[in-house]
Length: 467
Image 1: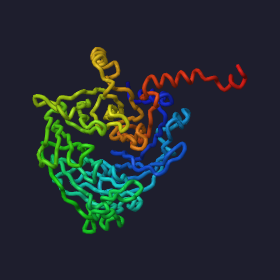
Image 2 (image 1 turned 90 degrees about the horizontal axis):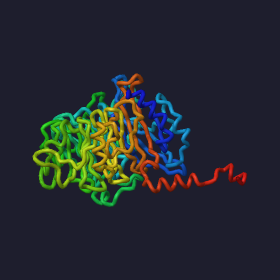
Image 3 (image 1 turned 30 degrees about the vertical axis):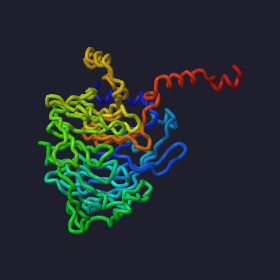
Image 4 (image 1 turned 180 degrees about the horizontal axis):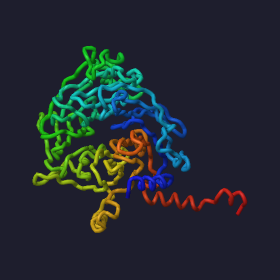
């Protein structure tokens, strides 16, 4: 099916499949998207920050943009309102709050879990930049404007570090990978107050003498690199060598800032333990049959890791038995994409559910617990004409490659996703905020009971007439 036909079919099903959806057309493509802190709660909606990037053509600066987003609460949106949107229009739910002029295009944003007002960014350079998005000044994105000054610069890479970036859920540690085949770990604990999202500093941060990140505006230089007025630079806590090609993604173990994993263009999945040294703790040489693009570690079950590859597949690995005879030994392999997988992420609400996005323009939602041998045999026999085992929802709202997505930590079944639409007639990019109908993922008996109850209720007309 052609992408335009697929999109038209998808749009006709939106009122049935979705509890809520907002479509926001972007002038420039965005390579990364993240949820920020929740600002307020209302009866029918909440207000929350979202972070996006703008990758321009040079006619104006590359930017890191903060938006305020109105998130409609579950079962509060009318079906006719969900359906009424234009692909070329901006959503009334998404309002720009602040623009930061970034030194170079922004390839990746990742927020600090302890305080999501603080983010790290990757660009086409060896450095990692740290920003406090609350204290950074709002800038006009004018051609020739000086770039905003990062709050911290993390150094240590000898080649460009463009995509592999993670921040630890347990403490203010940053992890990065790059074209130099290195994985680098930094601690920024002494430079920030790792408080909650309401701004109150944590006890450990204040007692250790940590100071809040502060900012004094843009750089005095027009060069792409900060000059002598640049902020503090921080060197590595550890440099980890084991990959033989570009490191494409990294991820911390959810319960530790000293254990992490990495994947790269050498087809390897490597696990590291900084407490034991800078060499691999474990290695899967052939985790896939092609480059690995992404990895995620399960927050609910730390034995489970996901990897996504250029070979279009997603592998689920068990930490306790990763490989055999030099090859990866996945618990399951998920095949539901027709192009390279770009992003995988576990659902924060359910241990067995995860999402995957790819260059085919699809964002698939899977349940690993739903895979069984009968489904796998049917899929093989039908040669791909039946749904892949484990796949229970397919978001087809984007017209081109879905480069990033993020489950909302405040509303776990709400997803933020972005596509790079440069190869489509309209160009630019698309931001979508969406939530599938809970009738799709709730237990079947619960859904059937609700449907039965709805059909057994008298209509308002019959109740009024006594019929």
